[in-house]
Every structure is written in structure tokens, then in C-alpha cells.
Image (cartoon, rainbow, N blue to C red; front, side, top):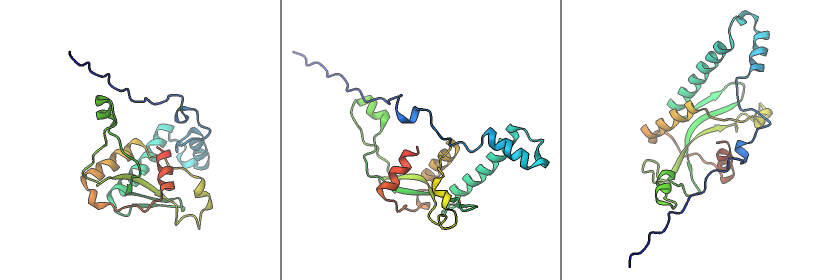
Length: 180
């Protein structure tokens, strides 16, 4: 008698009504229409710039910060005491799962990364030196754009020895994960 195959175990799908899909009370966008109108009223000599040109100028500044953060080992310090950006490795306290392989097999398959020895490369925004001069920086949030994440992951893959281990606690790592 032939033994029947067991059906594949279905993996849990994302809950589309979860908190990250709900409307937010705050914005993580840096460039908004309100900022453009305020900037235009304060800087009359540049009032001929359109909103799209204004965004291009901001992207040029952001690209400069992104490139400096990725290329420099120590990262970059943002002016006006807004913090530091750097890349570093964070030790993971949870099992990383390879979603593509897990969906094929039907069970959790651990993700094997031979380049990093079980550490995850992260974009780190630190405000530790800025708190003394700017108390309000604790109220700010950072959300990396796709360009920043892509350049950072490419740099981690090409030159993994360039970045040091970040000394973060489990609580700080949970904050980083919640900002994804």
C-alpha cells in the first residue's frame, strides 16, 4: 500500500490589518508641501524653484549623506546636533528565517549567511552625543529610504570587514526592528 504525502504546512501570512498598515498620526516624510511653502516664504531669492526642483535639491543632499555614511567607516555626523549615521553589525537574538526556502518546504528554514557570522548589518542612527546640546532630538525618528538600504546592503556584501560591531542592548535592537 502506498503512503500518501502529507500536505505542506502553510506559513502564516502578514496581517494586512496590523498596526503597520493603519493610518499614522505622524509622518516620517522629510519633504512635505508645508515645508516647501515655509521655505519659499523665508527664502524669497529662491522662490522661482518648483516643488519638484526643491525635492531634487533635497535628494542631492541626502545622496551626499548616504554616500558618506556608506563609504566612511565611522559614518557621518549630522549638523545641528541631530545625531550620527553609521553602518555596523548587530548580534541577532532571534532565529533568522529564509522565507523563500521556508515557503517551498513548508517549515522554517534558518537563513545561513556565511559573510557575517550570524550578525545582521544595520543602519545605526545614534543621538548619544547630541542629547547634551539638543534635548529635542529624542523626539525625532529616522526611517531609511530604499536607496539608503540598497547602498548599505551592497556595502555590507562587498566589504564586510570595514564595519565594526555595534554595542546595542536588546531594547535598542527592538527599537531598530520596530522602525522597519
